[in-house]
Image: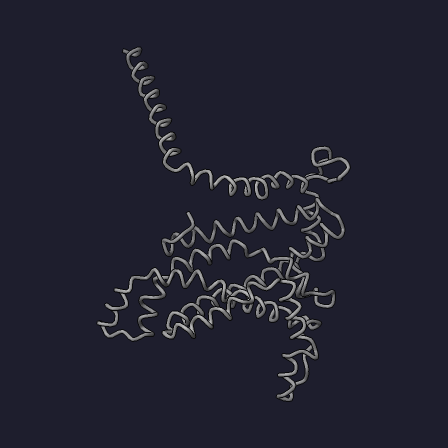
Length: 320
């Protein structure tokens, strides 16, 4: 009896393998061009995103370029302890979190508001003009953008000239610590609001027009239609992008920071990524800067999981 059972199990296993092989061959014949097109994308992620993770182990070593990654001695969590006991840790975490939170409060809703306003515009020429003007800063180099910001906010710049017209004393924006965050967030909105609104405009175009007709028949005005039809229609897109933004709460890009700040405003401008840049590139403390970056990535990963879990339980919209 047992021999017969084993024979049937082996027979089923062989049939299952044949079916799987046949399925894979059919899928390859059906979609081979799609798979071939995906190869460069896979190679990009393997080479530039997954393979460099191997280098993260130098966070636990006293890395020496002459000895290499494997030849450098292990040091355990010494670099992490050095960062946690650093004089700068409170300032770095505070500045990073405040910039990220201000970004979520002010920058994140800006493209949503712009998309909702554009959706209400019926003159297509005016709508195209506004969209084109709002997209332009996205295509300008970051170096040029920051150069314009520094020029506009200088003591003799455009903004201070406008302020002076109203009899207000000129403000040294870029050497006064209390103004850095405002200038950073305002410039971020100016540069990205138009481009980021594209995804919301795409979401708005997918809303069923019959819903607006039904709301109109029920007597709903434009404001009520926006509240009851438009916003629920783009809510899943907003939630997904908000989850991704929260997953980067501890990451503020160093490129813009190092172009904007100077030692006189480090108190409010210095963030974790700029500190990692100074330690890793300028002072060549590779292991120390890698440890800080690894700590940052782990916190972001945990925040992403937390935000996704909360969203799944509250709104039933999540990344996975």
